[in-house]
Length: 224
Image (cartoon, rainbow, N blue to C red):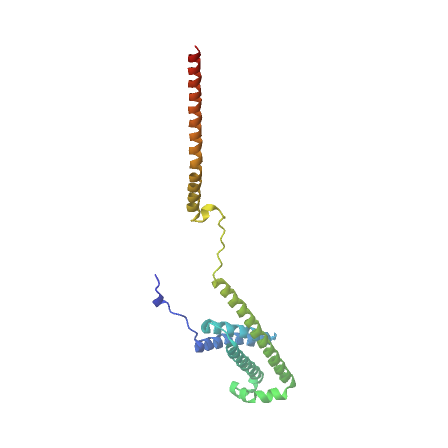
């Protein structure tokens, strides 16, 4: 049997929630990079990044308020921007690798390469804007999902109102048998004088008839 003293209430763990959210967000960043190199719409992965961060954050913080959504949004924006710069850096390195540039050297000249290439600049801006839009949509969607789930849990915890389906019979009330006995006793008391009176009347009638018979017999004997 579990005692009340043995029950430990689970408390929010903010820093652990942030670390778990960052770790799961990195999984979404890997997906973002894969979609980028496969020439797919990589910015759609920003939606997945927000959901992963929010889900991991909620597991350890236990609740999501406005400040929590701000923290989740900041983590998501930072991770998406880092992922975008990292994927661009890898792309520049792959393009200049044959020229003898190392990865760190391409990092220092990455912005010069992007600035000199209009197509890369436009692509970077479009990906950044669409990623931010997906982040906002992801936060809004997860907030609506979390509210609905929380409401369902609260409804399950509420005690259901008991409905009395017992038929309205005399035996359903424990005081009814006593009342019935009292009423029966009153009826018996009221009926008992009537029954006694009726028996007395019958006895008087019988005695009268007997007296009349004896009188008629006496008259017959006198006449004779």
